[in-house]
Length: 290
Image 1 (tube, rainbow, N blue to C red):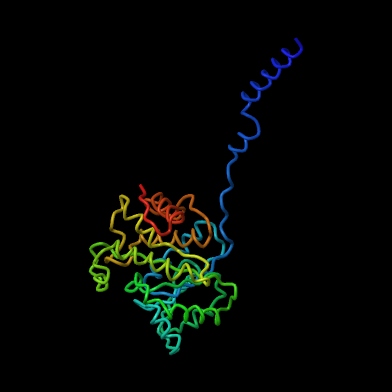
Image 2 (cartoon, one colour):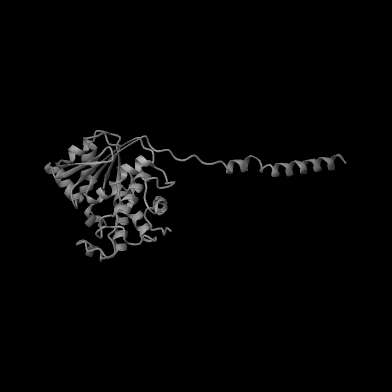
């Protein structure tokens, strides 16, 4: 009789716990994860060309909207500049660059500047590199010039702890008239997978790089959405929507966090969030977003 009463009471206790929410394990599942916090400071220098100009155009606004207190963005610009050209300017010391700098939301542009001047203007947290778009999908065009650029940056940077990132650029629009497009058979996907191939064979094995900023994959993800293949203003340079998407890609990678929403005002911000987060998960594969 005592055993029967004990079993009956145990059953009642179990029913009571279920009615109250299932105990500690269920309460743990319902706990809301804290949102990722923005870095306090972000000082980024891009060594590039018009493609880095596109990618960083709205990076200040995006970083500020996400809560970064101090934002400084620099871009060392030579139109169409390839790694070979960067290496040549290092050796010659020529003042071929236009140094663009943004510290308060407005860009100040200084012509006829050396790479060294921009490099030592700030103690940069992050320094990015990229290939010129004409050679972006061609493995054999990257070395020895990339190693020469990396060595120069390491030797002359004001910040010995600066992190190097590779800016993975985007393929041309499918109907682009760019003179280099025939190199890729006038095929957007051929160019895109060439860019991926460079990342796999040249950048990933290079221990100097802290990470890769997969803008090319984000743009390709968006091309498969309702946005379509109209993310450029001339067949290869990004339009404003593409520029905002690129800036969000940079922010997500450099802040090391997925996006919750697109706080910087932009139409179809939800698509940008999906495209960027998908590229963070699969940086070398196209993901359909809608």
